Length: 288
Image 1 (spheres, rainbow, N blue to C red):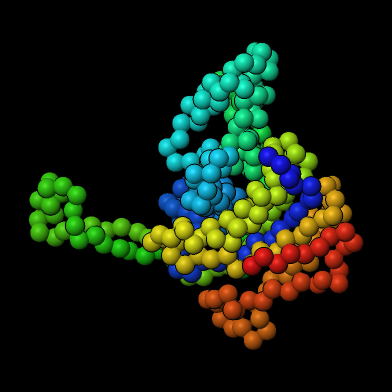
Image 2: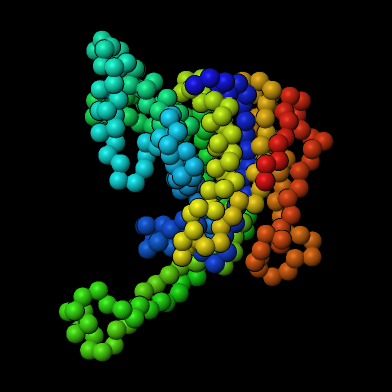
């Protein structure tokens, strides 16, 4: 890839959910993830990376170099083995094959050169530490997960129909959050971008994915999720000009002054930023 990313970035992503389950916890019966000590809602980094992968796969599925390595029903060892069969890897000496396979995987799979991957299984393509990393997202305020009873009027088998003796209803449970605004922090490393071939074009696609990933992820559990704001801090150097936590502290999210009762919309919040305190060598890009 040409035009490699040469600047360090940090970003703050705000997204919300209304009457949905943004990230179910399989260890808790698919209840929305929650911090048990504070009651704040959580969304894992893996959850958001999955949505970015899905978006890239939708918009760039036929573009060379933008395939997705971690995708549904993909047999990862088969993909790694395929890398070892291409000429540029196959012709290498034994000690050089792993590195050649790693380079091939970075060049051909967007998520590998973006987020990294462990590819030391199968024929071995090494490990890649990606330049883009995300934190867990945390809700601005504590959430109250709701549990709803639902019914299904149909049945799956004749035996089930006979067992119910004319009453075809089967009961189920559904979990939602009435409303929550979540905050995620992220990082882009220029030195790691050089190692994976992560380019400026890749970065633009990543920003686009963060802004649009929920628009193509609708389901009964996630009908109303949206990216509300994306604040990007750009350093004018590869290594950075200020600590990440100092930049994150500049973005303040809180309830509007006249808000009362539990939040039920993004308009119940306001986002403030002290631009006079931005360190020298750092600029802000508001992308949403």
